[in-house]
Image: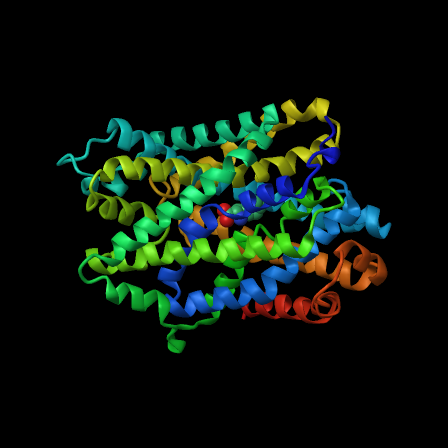
Length: 442
Ligand code: PHE
């Protein structure tokens, strides 16, 4: 089946792009970043960037995909007749490749936690969830390499068999269930003694906590959660039918992402305060704090298990979009090569994910630039390649594409959004991205 003719209805497209967007970014990365960069101040910056930068950029990527209707290492040439501009597509391809490398590390942790809650591979010292020791699990290189291998394998099988559609259907009930679970965790977390301090920490923006670094990471975070600048969203939009609604889809994806990020923050920070954790724990934050919260619930182990399955599902709907982008760029719409490319790409990703995972054990001493190897991979993708890719696309759309053509693909414009959106893309956002980008090197 030709991928280009898939997704006859808008629903498939929305489910897939929401699936790509909502994943580890909102639930795992947001709380730990907010913990490091000032809590409420970070949340505020993240909201501003997501609404005023992320949303218009998402609309832009959808419009480009809808106009170009081909894979992203070709689409720029097709739209502008300038072959060298395909470099923006290659930049995106490189970004998702590295991103998948470190994403799978965390996907692997979820799998290990699932197995651990079910079978106690690393024994809980006093038989409670609260005694799960993050460091002893994640510090075990073989265990984590196996975990991420399973995560990559699962992603590969889904993409190879082309069963994404089934997954999208499943997300219709898995996602709402995830929301419900997050709300339960928030309620539990808020009921803990001493939780109010944590609530204040995440909801009160203290201006003195805003740093230049925080601004940069908040922008990177909004790119990361919305899958922007990697051309992943362009790929999904290129598969969609003509009836796809750019504005409604983009607004609902941004809205859901903000909601999940805030819920994750409300679930984690009150518990951090109640249990006396340090908000600047880093990537392990969620994995350290949540077992403690579930430990306080009746049937906590069962609930935690279900939550982890839902969490894994959300991570998988994102990782398939990472692999899918590679597959679509290398098969060039020839689906007979789909299986082989999915396998090669997955093997390569597995190889580069090994140093990322070892950043938490045997290679933890290697520190440079942004921190460990894992931190540097994340920094390279979220703070360099994604903004660069988005910048490239804003320049193409604002400077090279025909305004009327864009308007046609933007769709019916009941709320007169086209002109403000167009000027934002043409004049303002490129400057904003460049300024923030340059600021990090000063
Ligand atoms: N948006 C995804 C998440 O938050 C990550 C992602 C980035 C997926 C880029 C695809 C492309 O988990």
